Image (cartoon, rainbow, N blue to C red):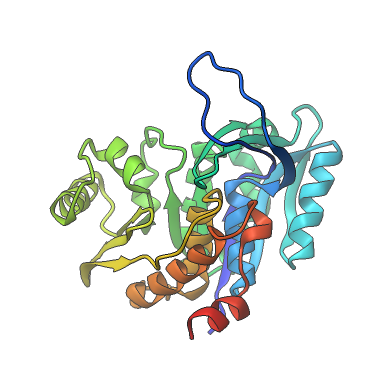
Length: 305
């Protein structure tokens, strides 16, 4: 079965500065090179989903500028439906500046722009699209009240909702009640639960805390170690594939998008979908950039099958 995935999220033009090491406070350093590419957590997740075979649509907003057209073109070049990407006449298209060191680690500064100017009322026109989805994904680079409105519509139509709480922020009332699966990394999970993620026991305790908060299904991504999962059917840990990372920028987004393309609506094949997602993200980190680094299903299968 081919999943129909809808992503509500951010569209950013990424500027990556390649440096030897991160600057210290007050230090001025020189960048070795600079690259510009399409990105944003939402865009990355959508491209990962469509490149892994999902029929993918996007809900978002850009500015009335050249970067906005650039982002829409980037989505459409991958075959993503952009009928519900609005154009804001006031705010500019979102952007991000990424510092990437020689070890493949990054620091990212994001300007929300048109992403943060989205309004809940925009979801009314998107309801027919949401109704026909299997999986609906959102994250925190667009306003939470917009996600809440979209997730409520998704649940009315039996659509499985996946929340990526990144960047970490306090979750608004009601949002977890309409979330089927939450996917933080270890830092975001600890920020939300107050329980540091160090080992399997601490991940189990994070799962217990999320259950108390109203969400029973959890995946915690733990970088190069792998991913922990907890659902009604059980819990476990799927190790990551060991590779030498060049750029971790889109790794987490690739993971979520690839996962959404393979997971069943009832989450009954979580471990299988997680393994595929780990394979996808392991290829992403070996490449530079956000969208350009995300592999296709054919590339993933060639590497791991």
